[in-house]
Image (cartoon, rainbow, N blue to C red; front, side, top):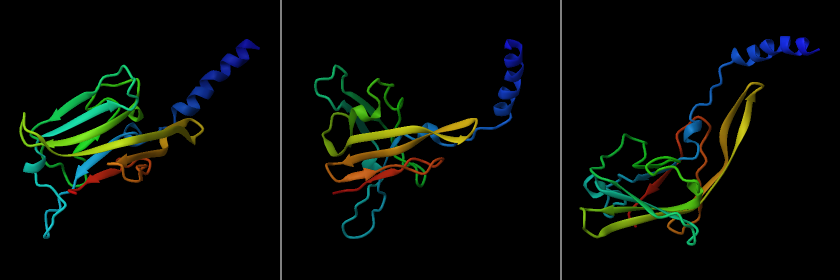
Length: 179
């Protein structure tokens, strides 16, 4: 009986080994992407020039004030304008901050514009109430892919934003505009 069971194992393993599992973009499913509007036209432009956003501070603070986890700050100096459609700030599980046991939803994030080191912050934006619910969805009998069921956040106390993106695509980008 044991021999019979062991003789079938190579066939079972071979079935899945022959199948390529394509889960494009799943490593970016939980990413939080922020982009500054570059629309500087009109009488009251809502966009930013490259010079205005060349120095950014990204601050990560735990949601729970009683947490022993400390607040982190990352400085993005000489920040150039990204390619069309790409985010200015991309927050991942392990970038620009180190990986944390709290996960992305355990923090609120603040992006601050500072003209030069030591100068006051000119403008800032807060992303809070981050909620990410994910699962592994079966693509085939041998393949499962990671996807978001729910991914939400609130920008500056506004309404909840649905940040889910189609599987295999870039993360949904939150646009930051002058207020």
